[in-house]
Image (cartoon, protein in one colour):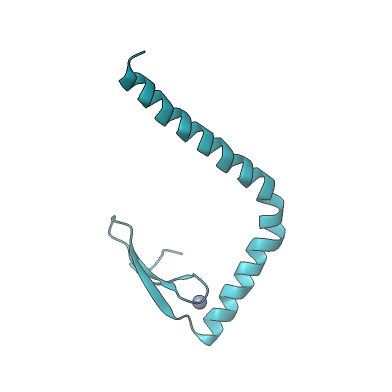
Length: 85
Ligand SMILES: [Zn+2]
């Protein structure tokens, strides 16, 4: 294996190791996320919406859509074009 091939393999293996870790984290956190985290974030976001989101960072996805994040709760706001429901 050449040095270049060895470097490419290291880069690929790094990606595989990181992906495996992310998938394991997701698996280990799934129950907590579904029963505690997501409901808490949903309640928080709804409460923030009632008092009014505060416009924060601008984001563009490079595919023609852009939005702002709420500075208080992180919700997406003022999306352009609006998200289809
Ligand atoms: Zn908010």
